Image (cartoon, rainbow, N blue to C red):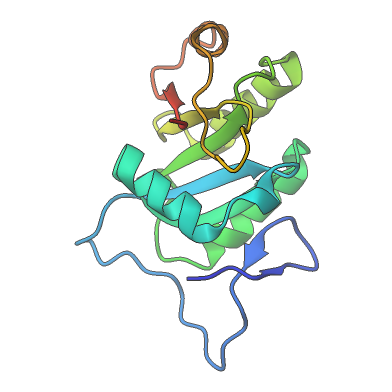
Length: 171
């Protein structure tokens, strides 16, 4: 699906309005589903195809949808709920990918946001913090520096949650 318009009431990107819109479905024959949160400041840089292809090749997941990450937890949670309400896929069966710029350290606000997400989606829902490096010319998915990966890894490990992991989303 190509997502081309922004919802008037949320930070979620919605598909163009067709004559008759059927809910997104999971046939059971496809890859596991994921929702990706993309920070609002870099969201316009990445097309749906860029993200879907990257998620499939890196994580073997099928992108079910995308939420523009505002870091306002109430807004982001509402956008996730709105997206999930349009599907027949259970949130517990969906992995969540949170895209982050690795060179920006994981401040307390970010860790709190991830904890809030964890608390609302259940203890065993898989969460991947997908890190990219600083953009370089036309390269969107740049590799983060090893030192940045380590900083994020320590911050996420300190949460003590075995279902949240850090992944290099660049390169």
